[in-house]
Amino acid sequence: MSGIVKQFPGVRALDGVDLEVLPGEVHCLLGQNGAGKSTLIKTLAGAHQPDAGVIRLGGREVRLTGPVAAIRLGISTIYQELDLVDGLSVADNIFLGHEKARFGFTRTAEAHRAASGLLTRLGHGEIPPATEVGALPPAGKQVVSMARALSHDARLIVMDEPSAALAHDEVDNLFRTVRELTAQGVAVVYISHRLEEIREIGDRVTVLKDGRTVAVGLPADTPTREIVSLMTGRDVEHVFPARRDPGSHEGRAEVLRVEGLTVPGVFEDISFAVREGEIVGLAGLVGSGRSEILEAVYGARKASGKVLVDGKPVRGVSSAVRLGLGLAPEERKAQALLLEESVARNITLGGLARYARLGWLDRGSELADAGRQIDELGIRPADPGRPIRTLSGGNQQKAVLARWLVDRRRLLLLDEPTRGVDVGARADLYAVIRRLADEGIGVLLVSSEIPEVLGLADRVLVIRDGRNVHESDARELDEHRVLDLIMEGSAL
Image 1 (cartoon, rainbow, N blue to C red):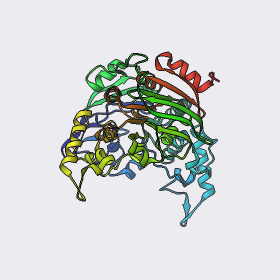
Image 2: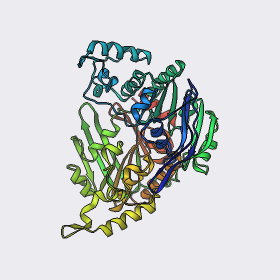
Image 3: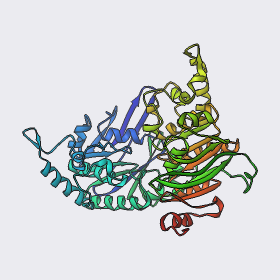
């Protein structure tokens, strides 16, 4: 891709971007949210038409008039939000849109044989082609998406944040699968905000900033500080704000008390408290029950036990909101955002009643409040009327957080708050979360990234197989100790 330009109304998303990918290599595409990565890969996938520039495949200039044209030329894209159909089988998903059929009838046996061959090629022949995709774990769904790409004879596969929803051991399997693909000559464009992954799986790196290419073909082992500086224009590397002194929360009022919280088969006998201005982190593997605990605290999941906010019981979501709880869920696009609505409406959604005047919305007050949050959190572009689907992932996450800041909350429940967010925006989010805690808001935090939990939280609960196996001040733990607790269960 040479000199790629793409302009949308009011913004030049790509301004002469270059990308060169070699056969059989893992080429990592890096950049902050809003740098142009998504627009570039959608252009490569045929979803966007460039306003200028040239795309060459195998040395030949091509025009990607749409996604089907890209697929026919061997370009497949696996997006962060996998586009699988949970109700269909593995084989049906792999051949969706180009079914194995004859005279209008699906040839199921042939589809199963072909699907099995593709899964075996990826090193996952143990996945039954007849299994319903919805029953597979995230790692299995990722493999099915790769098999679908290979079913189109892919020469180039784009992977957008493929490890975001995977546990530690599943990431190792993902990397093994990627290496098997590249060994067969398939090129991979790999997008991730986890810089340690880039060093492990990548061959070369291209860095985007503000819609421009700022580095091409860097070695994947380029020092982190240099890459971060290219991405952000400043030196940022997991900068965690200073915490209060140990013990500073003692004597402060309890915002949340959880006693014996249980959902059979998911988690059991969970008890803890969160005080005013305290950040409590839940550490554990994907599937350990962390997110489900947040849902139960919020009243969105039926559970036995007690959840008390300022001494008053939570009896459902409406009750939780009324008592001052706010939830930022892991799947922001599916669970937290109205993608076709404006940034302002998404920010004020949690408290529309406050703008009601005789059955009408006070649009001026709504826009004023949303504008203050946009400025305070640095949401870009700073346009309250812009559809939120056009914002980058990091800015969408800030908008979800802003929703609960318009009407101040007593407690924020944050599930993977920096998932898919670049290092620069992470530092901004860390600073916002710490500032809110310093203002007296309690925070209950879930993150798959152990350094994030340890760097941000004041106190940490380690969750393994639905049980709280350890609780202590975050300063008393390190990454190795937490991994030992959640993977080996040595605390038991």
